[in-house]
Image 1 (cartoon, helix red, strand yellow):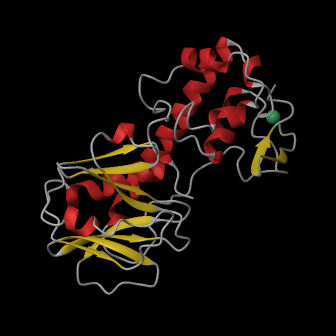
Image 2 (cartoon, helix red, strand yellow; image 1 turned 45 degrees about the horizontal axis):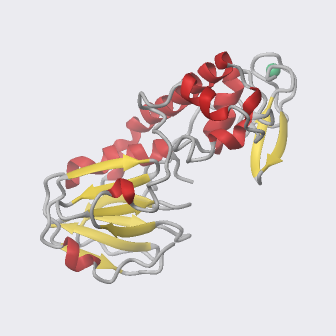
Length: 270
Ligand SMILES: [Zn+2]
């Protein structure tokens, strides 16, 4: 599933090809994504220039002056830059055409979306309740500490809640908790201020490192038929249940929490 680092890498990969460029065509082959692609979208976008492109959580926002186009990659979506006349494959659901190039969206499971936002994107229902970006100054240990007081929810679920902080997916939650020595099932409200500072630092670290590693795949966003933006990472716990802990060599424990794979070390994480 595309997580925040993949979405950020996608943004960086496609931006040079669409910024300041005029949309000359919109082709919707499959409007039934997670939410229907608005019928009037082509009319709204054609002839407009992409003035800015940014990410909020795992949403991509293309500012065309009179409004924004919002794209989410869902469970299996990807975007790449192709020659506009390249024949589409079965799961290539829409193209935004920029002259001879196009931004093509592929999504086998169709959980992604392409929507239109009038006015301020931050007040749109999908974005309004989102917590701070983990890689900005608004996300700190003190913030986590204040928000987690009296919360009995498990800390792992707490940091994966986009109302608390956006973009901390399952892999990153597992990794950051291990690096912080915090057991995923521990009550959020029981964390000390120091715990929260470590956790905030490590969340930032794992996300930033992943974006950095994704940077080496940027060329994959242009041409080819590869799946861009999903990169292998060196992980300490995720995907390593039953294998030895890198610190103490005890076998890592794997459990399901909220239907998500959770891996931790019973010795190193308190
Ligand atoms: Zn250990």
